Length: 237
Image (cartoon, rainbow, N blue to C red; front, side, top):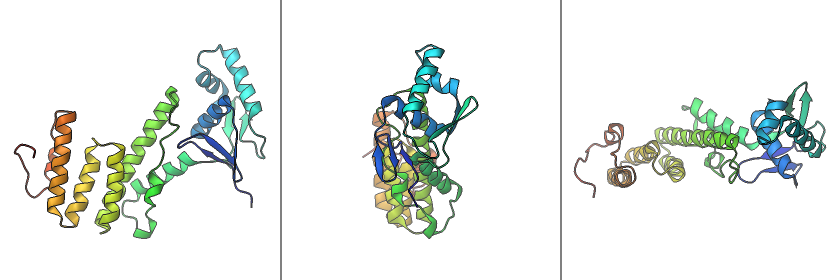
């Protein structure tokens, strides 16, 4: 069977028909990206979002042109339903696949070892890097937060399942994305404690404590310091 069309929005925007990438014009990229994220939208809202500085008449004209320039597929990538545009259900969008994986982790914290996703499913490029439209910034932050929460949850599940090496990989992936996020550092310490590596746990806690003091002038929360059998209250070393 032919491969379904795929829209990649994590990293460079790219449409793939079969196994081949398809060249899209600038307006076509914005149109498909917005539709791929939203699924369905009113024509007026779409035109006003993509061409905010144009008059309504010119914006709707630009939208018609962008729709006409889209690759011809069966079914159409975007179809009209009255005043609403709807993306084809056949179109696979990588952001939705990531969202499904992340929500699966968050909802199924007690899933078996064999049902856990590969770490690579929760990492990778950010959403449409370099795009600075407001609607992209909102979606990018949503995806970023969802990824971070999923990585923290995955690390927690793997620690409780005794897979501490994999738990550390998930926790460090979260730390790399947001170095000042305490929950990610707690996941690192939790994995070290599960292995009985108290020295590693304390060393990591103190490193994070120094980072917080230098960057924000604050201390870790009592929730974090309370994880350690010995709570250091003296100066950072």
